[in-house]
Length: 233
Length: 233
DNA sequence: TAACTTTGATGCTGTATAACATAAATGCCC
DNA sequence: GGGCATTTATGTTATACAGCATCAAAGTTA
Image (cartoon, rainbow over all chains, first blue to last red; front, side, top):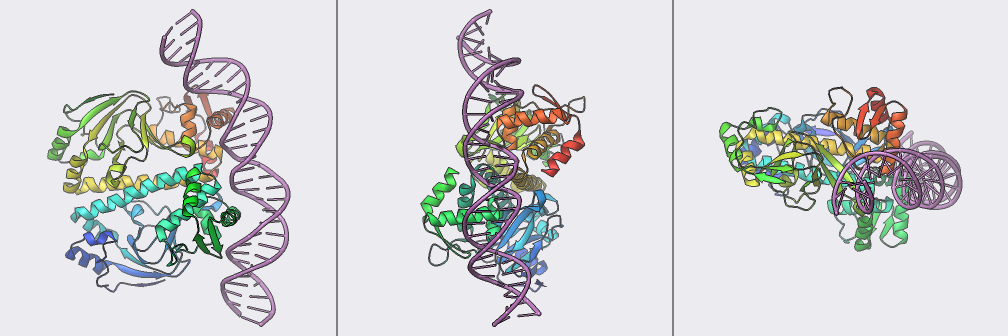
């Protein structure tokens, strides 16, 4: 992990993020106070119980956020991609972090201090509403996951996780290889199952030609069938 | 269900709600356009897939919100009490309702139309931030529930649900009887288990003198033990 | 008040899946 | 490049819980 607070020109031009809603003055203020930090694979960005350092923007990389449950068992509650936001839920709720964030590949994260964020929130309604929309959608997602993870059977849960990874990270150039490389343990923690069962069920899917596996590389061969398995539960 | 849009003086004086953050002019505007609707026990307020009618404020009563999962199995994702808000998540996310709301006792609900809500959100920062805080806390709750419902065993899940009901609705005057009367089926749907198992486990708790049951009336006899069961999973 | 429906209670059975064990393959580092 | 740790793989066993059936009690409707 290596931090800097040098200004970074032009980083918010992209309208994939909510920062494009900021005025030039607001952008300048944010850029002046933000810090940029680099994380290597498997490094922690924050832990459950930490005080939020600010709203964090994933400029580059991939991150998993998990909660510890019974007996330290991890449940991944969110997979974050480039341009995603982290840490803002706890900040806006005025709570400590309720999950742990870990880089699953080398990542660059911009941190906007709480007071600067609130300055902008109080001034810029569109930004404020956009952030509210993000929160509201995330809540919808979480509610949906609760039902899927509790009610679907192993095959359905795993299929849903693979579809989630595909929606979030997309495919490599071949149009079928998931553009994210997780350990079987991570896949299990995402899908609420043991590592053994993740391995077993992935093998089964491969046997059924729904996917193909080559180490951590997962190819989706039959999208429709995968969606069917996920839907059926 | 019976609706009216007569003005209601002084309903927002109470600082238990976020409406106390409104200016007198804003209150007047909201009161002018809102409608008040009464629902009897078991009546639907909205269903999964419906378009949000606005932000709804539970002036009086109790409501459950559930989602349908595999094979129509219901999972209660929220228990709402007096002064609580419903329907705002879907509205702010610009989505259809992702859950169904049903009155579990006679309820009075005030509906604020979308455009009026947005007028206020764009004008009043404090109100806007307070609503954001509500959303952020709800998201934290949902994430926590996901982990509890997937990882805890039946006893832990049921204990947690009873504690949730107590936090949300409190006790009757005797200081031990839960101030909410649910069917065993609702308790089961809240706790991710079958009705049979809810009945069985409640009986076990009663046998252990952790609770006492008399029809739908549930007394918590040993709070510490209940918390221990919930925590252990 | 009778007929019907819903809710609550309990026992039994089957099965999905966690837990455990072990081995092979892969990655890592001194 | 050899040795150790981690990850992946697969078979076996144990068990928590759903599913189902049955019955009693309470509530609802005609």
